Length: 300
Image (cartoon, rainbow, N blue to C red):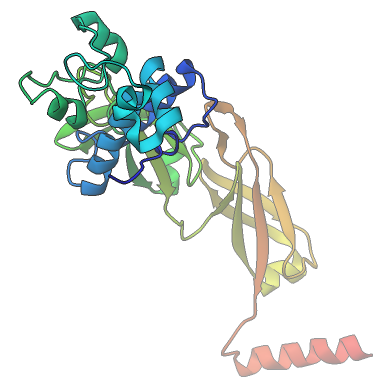
């Protein structure tokens, strides 16, 4: 029989306290529980190993023998020259039900101890309650749909979930919806749903936090002579004055015309316009003459 390092199995040191052993066992038992890993053979083997390690190390007397004799700890009585009475390794003591409860905790007998007693007793079902697995999902939304807080019904695993989507939610932001994950084990609570928002690219606006950015096309004549334009924002149309001689790439800030702050719609970001001056194409002969005159005037 190969030596199994039970301390390594439970990921603890040899100086671990009984409380440390208990915590390590509960953590790993949940991680590798067959109900949470139904198709993972490796996880099931680890679950059995964790149970067996706990059954030995959680009992001070067995742990002492294990520390002293290693893989031969079950035959410690023979090494110590003690009389054998009844089953080997138990020093002839008649064990009561409460002894096994103390030794094995709430996890039930391991395969090793079942074989030791001939498999005559029924294996007790574990009473440890485990939280169900958490579930992850992604919800895609267009930019304008998160401009205002609204309700949304999601269909997940044949169940409908009603949730509030707050204005200003960010791309990649994840929220937790408690109790909408996998079913718990042994009456444990359900897991949670972690919902990640994916804000789809917008053809007009670029968003950075609560600020928006947009390119505004400006005809050459308005750029040169100045005038007024009307631009669209997410909250409606806005009339702007364009100074004469406006250069290509000029930026203008429209205060309060950006995106709302998450969960606080009263705080709004700004909209930044970048003017893109359009150069006219397919000029008529008359227009070419006028531009030529302008060019000559500029040279003089």
